[in-house]
Image 1: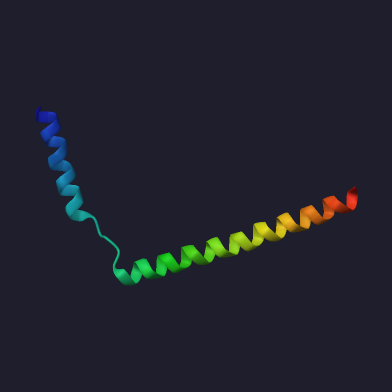
Image 2: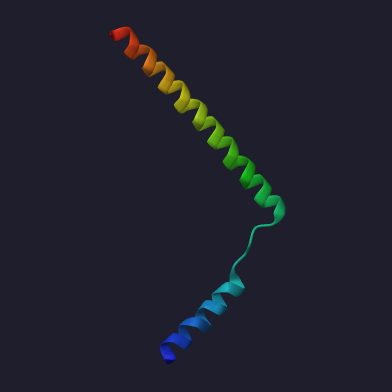
Length: 59
């Protein structure tokens, strides 16, 4: 039991040191994430269309 209690005391101490991002930071991170998703979606769509076109030329 002492090991479990010591573990949770350690967790509580560690949580005091955690720095959570502000709303401004989360907005920036969220925007960057959505931008990268959009860019990669365009890239993979373009690659798929190009390969489909090249494949249709080979038939």
